Image (cartoon, rainbow, N blue to C red; front, side, top):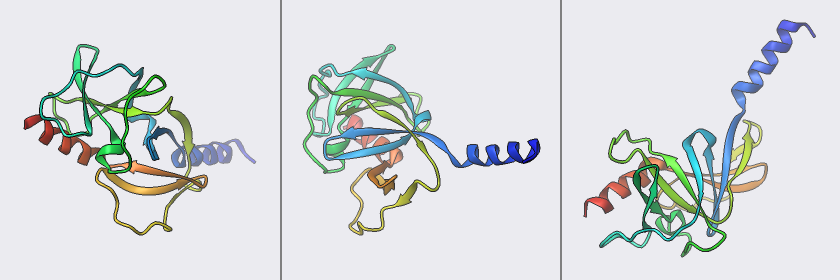
Length: 165
């Protein structure tokens, strides 16, 4: 194999593979691009938000910000979820462009796991035809492991609505 064809095939592999993160929540696993994650923190009790829905656990302090902490399992109606000793908090970059909400946090059950996501390893989960839960964009299989791809925009919209109330 010539050097130029080796470079082309390695470039093709780079285009097809992305770094992802599997995040364990109560009742499911979330799959997100690694680039959406700003930091992983140890869980600490959040400051309550008055009249908040059950899925908005409160606010946490992070780098001078007061970030809303979301229970994705609750917002999607998957399971009741509480923070505990082994829980972590994943700080995500918000995608909506709101300067007042550039990040938000999701409660997780343990440390997120880095994965390589290739086209061949990721397939839509055709076995589950029921309607997708709120905040879920797709059900997928990554190397035969079931995962949910969150709809970050829907979660942000729900956060804006909850925080405005």
